[in-house]
Image (cartoon, rainbow, N blue to C red; front, side, top):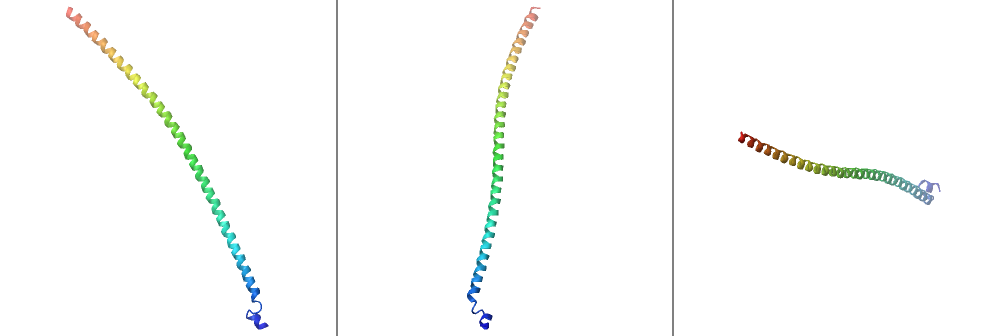
Length: 116
């Protein structure tokens, strides 16, 4: 009997069961470790996704503000262009009026100088 125990005889089934149990525990530990790694990667991925969502939201808000500013600037530019056209017309009318006054003054001067 001693010889059999020394060479693994007699308790072979018990050793196989122990080896299978150790392998099962090792496999379960590896699976738990892999599961924890995957859960950590998932949390990190969700954190990155949330950060990107916030950045996108911020970019959309900046775009909205820029578009509103553009609309206000376009409106102001339109108002300024209309005012410039109005001032140009007033200036042109004033020039025409001054030219007519100058022409009348020259006519009066020529009448006065020809009568003298």
